Length: 246
Image (tube, rainbow, N blue to C red; front, side, top):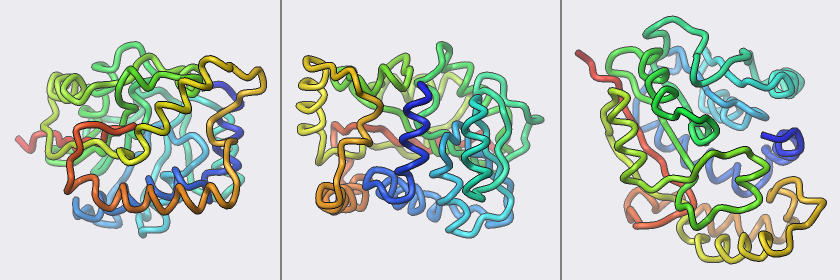
């Protein structure tokens, strides 16, 4: 990602509606997985620490972050969110079968070889352990945010699940989320692509207390219902994948 995206995320991750809603969704899914709070957990693509904040708040005590950007390490340290190692998802600097839970949220779309990244996630998972994986969905939603974030692709659900299975992981569940805001986000991205403001840093800067409250209410309902509704579209995809126990 460009440094501007890291800077914006570092400033907004604690209160922005998107980060808040995602943490609620991830917290719910993690709770259903039943991992012990003392289990070793890896957060890949830590960035400004939003997942480290979640994991700390729900009680995990053995958490490590991984990011390839030194600024991410610094920001997380300054916020007191825990230890972050430098490294890449395509070459995870840990031994085989090191973790009982992995979060890889919006990270595999950043690398050329996403199958290698998913294979590395499988390698460092313990047998029977789960990974929570999210990616941006639908190529039609491609916009300036994807460009400044240095995304290589957006995914269709079937293509993502095929890659996950190809890496030797079993799919436990998968669904789209951020489906209620799909149409307005698509429209806003079309406007931004045509306008192409030279000062664009991140979509996270287009916010205000009122907008944050309104979109937060919509997104809260979205993430509370997405798994049950299983809509055929959404801005993002979530998949829970396990390394086979055998």
